[in-house]
Image 1 (cartoon, rainbow, N blue to C red):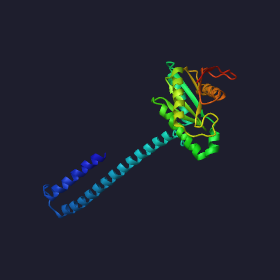
Image 2: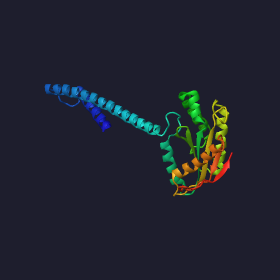
Image 3: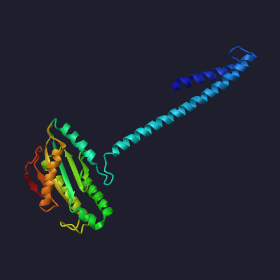
Image 4: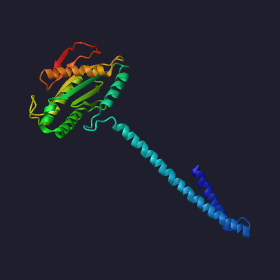
Amino acid sequence: MYFDEQKLHRKSLEFIEKLNKKECGIESALLAELLRNYTTLTHEYGNLLKQIQNITEMSEKAITDLLESSIDMKDKVHYDVLTGAYNRRYLDESLDYHIKTMSRFEGALSLLILDIDYFKKYNDTYGHNEGDACLRLVSGSLAECITREADFVARYGGEEFVVVLPYTDEHGANAVAERLLENIRAKRIPHEQSDVADYVTFSIGATAVNVKYTHKAQDYIKRADEGLYISKRNGRNRYTFVEFKEFVENDIVKEESVL
């Protein structure tokens, strides 16, 4: 519509020019008055069109900025503010999504849950600010070991993190667990009150299975958490793989492998 109005405006200016050149064959005082009024009206209309164009451009920019802000906020709600890792909400949503999609062809899904060893002692020794810094360092160390686009790290709560590995079987889960342990050990983050080492370490529980539509996200969390419990019981600073089974209350855990 705006471009049609511009065309009309141009034709009006052309008509005025013809009147000024007396190409219309009309000469009178009435014509002169009409010409003055029409010229004023045409210029005012031109100014109005420019204002409309400016308002339209401003509105489009405001809408674009609003959409970008909305997208940015939607993205931010999936991240843990402290560590930069994904948060619990993203973990729950993504696990549900992977279970639904991967169950169609029974692809392998692995999940690892880890807990920083003696983290309470770390906070008591170095203070909560250093404790927060330690969480960020651990999160960064985990992210360094996750190289595939579909894999991700999420903060599960406190000093616990979860690593989700779509299209990864038991062998792949074990390989990633070893890499995670080696990388954090190499950081040599001081932890003088740890009963395991004089630097920060963590313990891992892992599970993996070919996904079925009956599986639930909590089945993976609970099995991996049982592996984590075994790792802690056996001295920490290690991983334990636990065979996946759909969770049944009072079920007994089968210990599979410990590094």
